[in-house]
Length: 465
Image 1 (cartoon, helix red, strand yellow):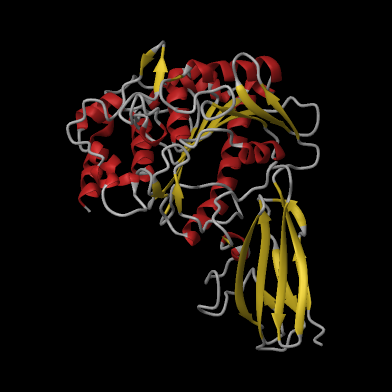
Image 2 (cartoon, rainbow, N blue to C red):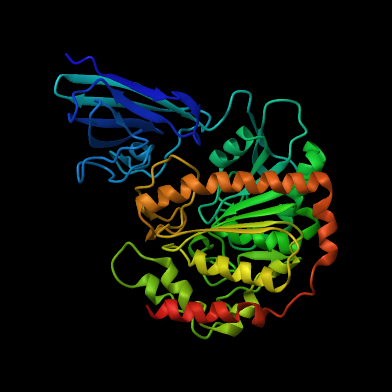
């Protein structure tokens, strides 16, 4: 047998840490197959690819691409064997239940006279991170706290139209030093099964609870949301500016939307989503002269929800009425989007938000990471990105989140370090007092129609494609 060796470094670490997978002492030019198997919430996910050893008998996934067409991915990617995994039976759940259980990947190397095995462990929760359920003040949440007494800066995490909790992101935020409250607002015990008629004051209560119970460092409470949650965090920043220290909006909306796929069937998908002071917040489908669901409803599955949204954006007056007044936000804003988003045009929406803030001379940092070819599901590094088609958790409609595995993996890998750097800088500014002083320089609120004029033109062009 060959004297070949397999090394994995580090073997056991947080999920956002890249690993080096390296095979040595092969015959120069020898081809070996490297395969993986990870059981994720009782479903096995697998990948494989072939690699050719260099003149020194080494295969190193940090520098070597697979043999063309030989496996699950094609380019140089140190963690390609992880993000290219596909489930052996239908599943989109890439984490364990509970999420604090580590993900253990078995790695095998096979070739002529070569048979090697190793293990790679990914964790969402670092040693000392604690979890507890929150059922106070009418809130339904799960709190993850970093090790140590604190105080820690805080982040409130909000899910999208699937509802429920986003515990994986909360656990990872806590592992990186933030008190993280994953706050459910529908489709969780004691809450409505639907997003329709959700009061914004519920989230204000959540931020009040964080400040009262956790006493976060520097009184820093950021809000982080994805998809409908991305729309929501921008809306909350505008509605309750003094309560929000920073906004992280993953694939957000720039306008308020109706209930859509997560609606209460008795109210309908064109009914309101958010309430403020007991009254519906105006949304883009309301009184819209161009909006139609036909591009989403018609034709074979999977459906692309973004096509229907683009029809709604062709009515400038409806867009102006529904535009989120982001210039009211009193803190830094981070936007993350993908150009091939299948759920809604997050690149266009992020541009609208950025342009509104720019025109208002927003005195705080605004960062926008836009990923070419990326879809709607921007998560964090080194999870599978292959499952693009899904049944919506509420409506059951078979849809596509858009993008493709490789660009989606790039968005995952690059966005998370960007978010951490953004929050680190926001906390530092808050601690130094510079964040509060900047607000006095804010420009007057601009008219909504002016803020979105250029974006309407973009939407019209995109809708015709």
